[in-house]
Length: 323
View (cartoon, rainbow, N blue to C red):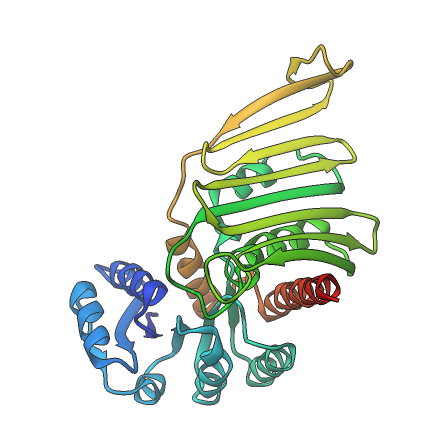
């Protein structure tokens, strides 16, 4: 079987998705890439030329021809396009965040369940080699405290949303997936720096099982930094995603640490893989084989809810500061 796949949106992420889909369709691949659609005909033609695919006149006509679609349009259009695609009988992959509001996310989850269709959300970090290396190790037990940092230089894109929905939501999803517990409290601060919306934010999260997390995100820095630290019931893990290095500190394992009696340290490295390609392949497997959806609508909704709670906490802190 080959999955008839279309892509809605030819912007920054739509271009990357189109190139990956075109590659997956080569040879005896399991994807039949129908092409892409975008409201800007010139942009659609440009990306279609790069990917060697058809630029469709409308999203609706592409949905009618496809078995599945990838939605890579701006966040404001996620709900309407996904709802139309589900109604047309398509499986749906929608880029993060799943939608612009909790109500929209709930509606999509319910619609996909009623239609018996796959709904996958584009939290691509779940497919990264760094996280896979941590999950493939003996681990550090139940997470007690987590710290994530994701900072990057300013780029004039995705400014329709805050840094929370643009960058921090990646780490919110990772922390939620590791904590495996209800998020019960959120505190946050943030400010605009180079755009009209929040460009730097710091959030403190508390979960029902006692786990805690601190997450920092910036899109107005001079350099990139991407780290995740997990202090667990059985040890400590430190991931440096840019250096591609995982350090594990645990009792009686690894090279002896004089600073921490009875503990040792192990250093693991990984080779980056194409996360987007892996994410698309997972979607195809879910559609054709009934494989488990790694990041389903419920996970996407949880990440959106956490991000909106952080935004609400930032707004409250700014309001209090202005009084």
